[in-house]
Length: 297
Image: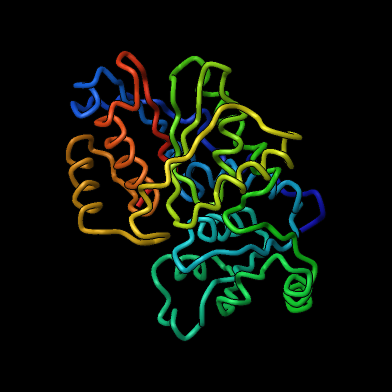
């Protein structure tokens, strides 16, 4: 592909994504209105924050091979592979963990491979050092000239791309909540909201590191803090890609109530957290809370 020839308009994303009410007595009894920002409907293969974060990075890549990182169930890897298939550029996915442990491939990695992504497995120690110059140099020596996109697609261009999510919700809601893995969506969302709004992040990983990551991303993308945001670290259910019977039961109940397929690793944790917070009185009576649905099962 010629440099600069990548035409993202061929993906035809649905923007802005729909905003729909979700009448739910668990919120209504506290005088709170719940809305769902259906970013999962932006594109069938690049839903939600994946499109918003990838688009500026793909423009910068200009058709070169895109090399990026993720775990065995990474939605980001799936979206990158799908974009490569749809737009005709090569992709490489650096996957955390020993290859033998991931054979046969799970459905997520199998879809990446079906979409043409070259999977490269590294041990966990190497993966933790993935941003070290010597690790990156080793990868580029294997795969040649690549545009390197970080884990989860979260970098300054991605945060800038997610500001539009906040702008789409200006004047529509008080609190906007999103599930967080690497912090790029939250960083951009907060920057795009109005002065009287706040963004709430529900981390899906343990560790308490996300606050620093969001601050770093905002500094790189906007030159410093941007917008009002906070994190509630209580609803990770054991960490990334981990769930419990309680979470599955909650998600099934939410699906029955609202006819919405609930993705378990991010969206279910977000919706569960918001339901608990509503019961705790975290949202003022008469207020509106919007949950950003970032993906589908």
